[in-house]
Image (tube, rainbow, N blue to C red; front, side):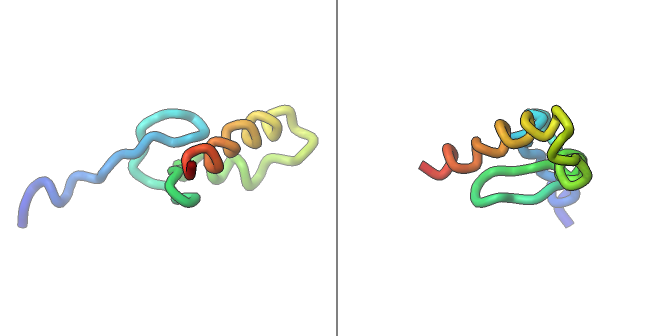
Length: 64
């Protein structure tokens, strides 16, 4: 087996803008596992929620 096959591919998360190897894709945009979990548990009244919405708007922009 090729050694390169064992190395996880890293993508840049659209929320935290860090390279991560685990996460989900929303259309062509990548959201890392830790940001996904934070978004899910954040209440709409939390100030972080507005930031997450702002970052997730990049999903629409990456499609065009």
